[in-house]
Length: 375
Image (cartoon, rainbow, N blue to C red; front, side):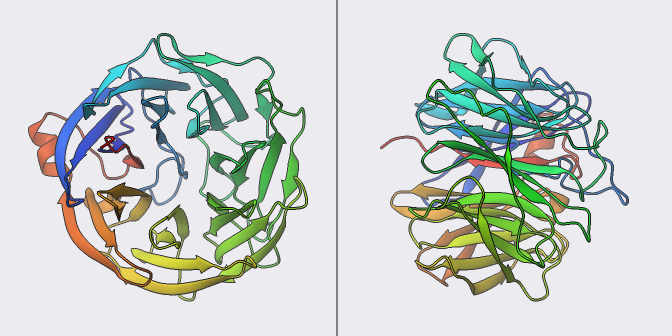
């Protein structure tokens, strides 16, 4: 199944779609998070309300899903029925995000720890232990501020928080922050101790000259490095091999408008980036020397507002799911080989949601995550 959040101010819901054996989608169910959505302040108003990636995440290990409630400053946790992954059960009550305007989430691989990035007036990170009966339980000594001069809701996209992830070896927690041109943004990195607590202060890494708005982050496997989309240029590559302060390089994407979301395909070994302005998926390769290059571009529906994306392996094949928020649709692409992505479905989310009594506003939709039933 794939999941997005409605992020409606009067009540947030997780909307589930079923994934068939051929990678295509059918409508599933919707579940209340018992929290409210909220849209960041931007002019003109439009899609990408949280200026973020990771608003909803699943843990296969914990068989759990977490979702932000930016209008309630909470995070909800659900258990996933492994026999029917479209079915969710709220666990406990929504947890205090320990800040304002929670907008991005991350699980560790074991599904025992989850962290949230808050982007409002009270911004920074906070972490939780994951309990199958209680839900998310705040961890001591894990709330760390970023110290940004922001509001609740935040004004953006420039100058806002973007995404939180664990490093590949899980010794670091990394948050991305967009700059306010001409001042570049940065990645903030906290060391994670054996008991899960975070270092008191973060280490700041800025992109090379030309990098401005680091947005989503995707781990570059086996390299102690991260690919960060950058709405100001294309994408940045941050190399953490020498410690918490990363060196970086930038790769322009000619003609890009706002390249902001990314995911990685194990099948092709490449990264796939989405641009909300041009409605384009850009396939990117990063070689063994951390040099990035553009493989191919795949235009999606003009004006569809391609934002969050996720890649899932179904029956040995990789499929990409792209939320076309402005068109209230999900584009499905098969990733059979490098440079050969192919559109297999444009799934209309609005009509079946309306029939199920679910309120969807294209400007509020956010997130994309996938859970695949074990064979």
